[in-house]
Length: 227
Image (cartoon, rainbow, N blue to C red; front, side, top):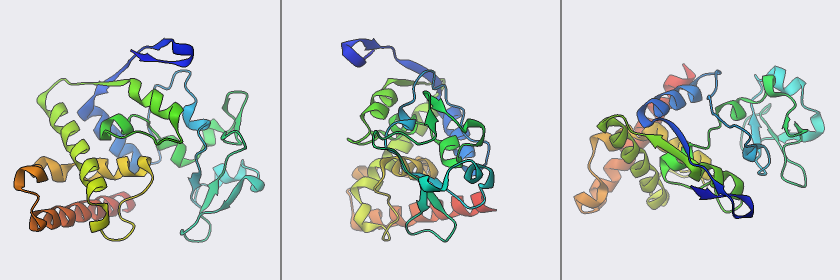
């Protein structure tokens, strides 16, 4: 149990066996179907000052968002935009405590799942306390040793990315905790096949081999996603 508002205890949220959740989450990131998240009454992601990326092919979404709420996405090709937030940190399409364009919400929103944070052993960041509180409530189930192995591998990947961020190609390791967690989910299998770096003496050669394996795994995953 975690303390909620006014000191009340917020119940834990039991969720899927970890390996099942991991498989579905990775698949959701590669398709337009999106994630299935039992949010209940939580609206933290809609009210936590997120910039929401929208790609140019999301025409139905763009048609439903007033142009004054979007601006060009920094560092991305023309046509990619970002949906901002209001002075309270709320998405401008969040009206009367719900998404006013839910059936046509951005792909970024469709694939968002705050369970990525406990999966990767991360928090949403100091500027996202509501999401961090909600994410800490999730409790994955473990129906087999595989569930434990996969969780260990994802968290080992996230830890390695943070510890050796400067050794990767520039820009490979995101600053954003959400994106860090997503990268860890995409390259976790590297850590299923390899021992912990610490168990191998943290040798420079081993670290470089791990970095190369991670970059290669990520590029393979990106190629499959775009095909």
